[in-house]
Length: 325
Ligand code: F6P
Image (cartoon, rainbow, N blue to C red; front, side, top):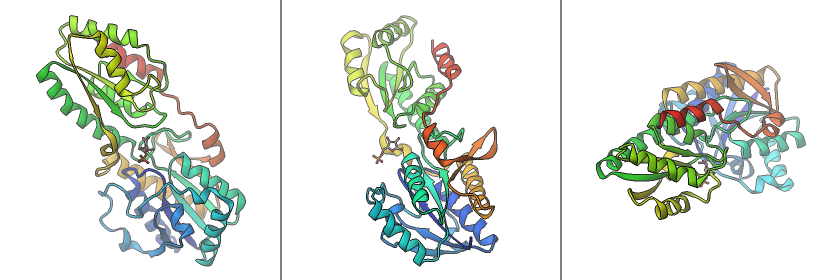
């Protein structure tokens, strides 16, 4: 290969910029040319690309978001969209792509790679949701979890001051990874997760017990993918039966996606970007770079997608319940 394009796609995640920096500098170190693609797959279709050099990625390690911008691109799902993208890629003399994103991004990359196998493709898992098979951690998950912990600690202060019960919705799509880790970190009284059914009666019982045990405030974290009807419905159902607390709802929303990446995500992004380019140079394609047991591991992109359902650790779920008594 002689020319690599790099793009970020889907929801942005802190750590994408350190990864872009690593891709650019590793490629240049190895004598390759690098092109940055703006707005994910949309930029391939619109031919919105620019040459990058070592200085294009100066002072971005600490930046949240993505300097390449990102998009969820519908046209790339069509045969025509992919063909336009392919023609633009060929016209630029690009022979390899590094795509940083989540499962939607990889689905696009896999389809494109099957249709146009002459373009090598390497995926880097960048999503706060931590829901990809083949990597214990995805880029942005650590920073997002810390952001959530910081926000919930602040809510705990006011909850405690007023003796209130808060229901807090956190992101993660179908994954409860952020909810579980933030719940353990903040000592949440309950964590509602998409990975297990929630018995509202039990929740009410436990909240009442907590009050009887002299708890002055309570925090219930509700993962956005939880199937009990959403944070407002759950709060409403509890409100009908728990009269001892004043109940409030907070939806943390997109603040969870922003912010300067943690040291963990800066290092992870650097390692993954470095590994992605080295794998392409070694002739690999249609794979995802991941981190398992602190070692970089490559997983077949198809396998990463078919094994997609991420399992939360049972032991952590149990521990969270016991420790919140
Ligand atoms: O995948 C990342 C994520 O932040 C999810 O946690 C959330 O469900 C979704 O993206 C929100 O997407 P959007 O920013 O398009 O509203």
